[in-house]
Amino acid sequence: MSKLVKFGGSSLANSEQYAKVINIISEDDQRKVVVVSAPGKRFDDDVKITDLLIQYATQVINKDDYQATLDEIISRYAEIANAYEVDEGEFSGIKDTFTNLAKNNYKNDEYLMASFKANGERMNAKLMAAVLNSRGMKARFVDPKEAGIVLDDINPNAANLLDETYTNLENFEYSDDEKLVFPGFFGYTNEGNIATFARGGSDITGSIVATGLHIDVYENFTDVSSIYAINPHLVDNPYPITKMSYREMRELAYAGFSVFNDEAIIPAIKGHVTINVKNTNRPNDKGTLIVPEDEVNHSHVITGISADDRFSALYLHSYLLNKQIGGTLTILSIFKKYGISYEHMPSGIDDLTIIFDRNQASDDTIHALCKEISEAIHPDKLEWIHNYALIMVVGENMAVSVGSISQIIRPLAEKKIPINMINQGASKIAIMIGIDQEYTDEAVVSIYNQFFKED
Image 1 (cartoon, rainbow, N blue to C red):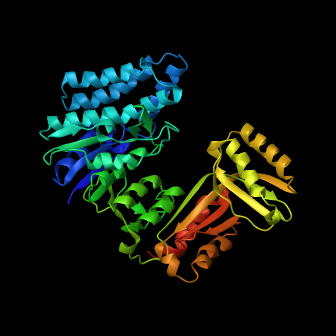
Image 2: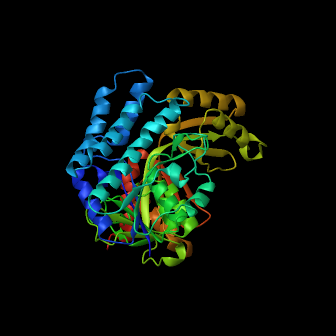
């Protein structure tokens, strides 16, 4: 069996965390491939390297003084390098790379930003390979260009993978006696420019590489010992999920389960790769397995509840809206004009609600959007709902359980929590509930207690 291990930013924040990672890699010969994020927070009020690089890039774009930011970035890597007595010549290359970011030429500012961000992972992978070699392990840094990880050039800071990547990875040559160290988060366009996935993209890289190299198990090391049925900050001793399906994880991650990126599941599905979410600080804990749906056998009707309050909604009421040919198309065309994609669109004969990520639009954009829709559709009522939250209740057993919806809704009714929208997906394993933001935590805990309280 072959394993890929991916380490998040908190697992690589400093030399102390590096020691845990080195032990994890060395204690299992099946761990052949390593994917790393950029160093994360060392303590609660700390700043992630990626955020420092964004600050550095912004200062360069604005022609502001960036030296203090650059010095801080380099010092974070130097602390790790010094702790492991990395050769000064090797570390000089890392230092020079960060310094030269401000001097290089870029296609535009978006590509500049992508390149700055990507080098957090790129330099950490180089540093990790150097540290492993210094500890007697034969390790090799693999740049995504060398491996053939190719992304499109539509948005260099939220790029999509091109299928040719998998062919390139299948043809990638390496020895069985070496550890491959890949940087997460980025690849290259066909023009040779660096482009990144969206934030959390190191999870995506892990899945892509595991699939392309035909790895059996993808161990995703983070700072929790399990994925829990609820946000562990909301209840004491939350129920740990030992095994869940790919599609359960996607549904839960979409609405707030940040422990694993929802887009990262897709390559793993393609390659039938088993994912194991584990804890860097407690590596012997079993963690949570993410597998195909035919391999799960849950004891509960639902597997988990997640929530996210990043949404807004546009509500329209217009009599005979369902009879208006092209009305919805007109509305969506206006959304497209303003660069806003919708997440969900529940409708009735006279009503339509369009739910979207409010981070996509400023207040000015929202005002202009509403004005244009009013002029185009002339609705009887148009209402903007800022404080919209979505709750996802997910479980493979929901598809075969009678009365699961009533069990979910009952505790909300008892708490007098108003519901704005209910939607069950075609897969029947997820129910989405729209509520006002102020009720989010109370609603999630109430549903959790309905199904898990006795545990």
